[in-house]
Length: 446
Ligand code: SF4
Ligand code: SF4
Image (cartoon, rainbow, N blue to C red; front, side, top):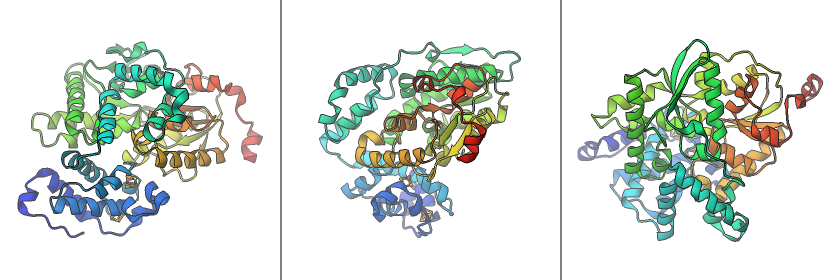
């Protein structure tokens, strides 16, 4: 695509980066077919190509963001399906991230929208505040249907029970069982540790059992993704730098073979820390070292090799590929291969490249589109008649669980159970155990 930036504009490293991305796009439109918002809404401006044109126009002409551009960028899920499809390697993620920062800087949102976003940025990354908010939401939950739009969506997403905090989510070291094979930091995250503390617990057990010493590093916390996707760059960078500093202390001290992330939405951002801080000389090298070591738990376990299952499992599991894992990190086969190696019968979900509508805070900010995507996802999941659903991202887990009676679990909970850990709570609540695995004849008939 031809661009028309002045030399003065290109002196800004962010503009220079976006110009490079814009020039790579050849307008072919292949990306439209796999874009969930285009598939649903059929508007070119709700496709990657349409959004690229809007961003180009804003940046080239040095214009403040218009209401029209904001509407269509806000509808983008940042699912990155377009990046998987694009034959020209257009880095849409960096382009839309730049656009979101520009929107935040130049566009005055209506008061309620501003207020809502400010509340999300104030609450979600902080486990203590988030827990209190969930408790308050619990009281208002029965009234969710009375509130239209975002407030109703937010109340509807609040879990029926707020789990008690887990002891594993404090800074500490969990020693490896037997010979130590590796040392890894675990990003224990913000929202996930509140909503589903069993995920970090299962991750630590699984890693320890495979000879990995796990450290929850002092000073690490939210990955910064939530504020990053809201365009709140200063807040996001504070989180990023806190994590880079905490993990650098570990890298330069006892050493780290990997930084393991079990929420793929966070993993995509941690892998991008090197890019995010590339223009800050005091941070660039350290951030790049952190990104080099960042691995999704499924990647790390695949490299390590899963031990033989300690018990028969065999349940039929639909694997829901989180967009941040399959498109953001291009990690596709490892989770399914691990589940199969652990003895589960893995069933692929049709149209698995399409988002479930969770996308960070998207299901709160764009509840109508998010609900349509969720309903569509659940319909495709139920078509493969699974006994449970596995996924690698807390956002997807909560989104899907909110619309189906099937138990929805994190992939690590299943791997932990298969290799000697406890039965995942969601399976227990559904009355499932290994004894319920389909027989060979049933599986063959399916
Ligand atoms: S990130 Fe997803 S929703 Fe946004 S343009 Fe790309 S495919 Fe469409
Ligand atoms: S597929 Fe890639 S090159 Fe083609 S229009 Fe989409 S972003 Fe541009």
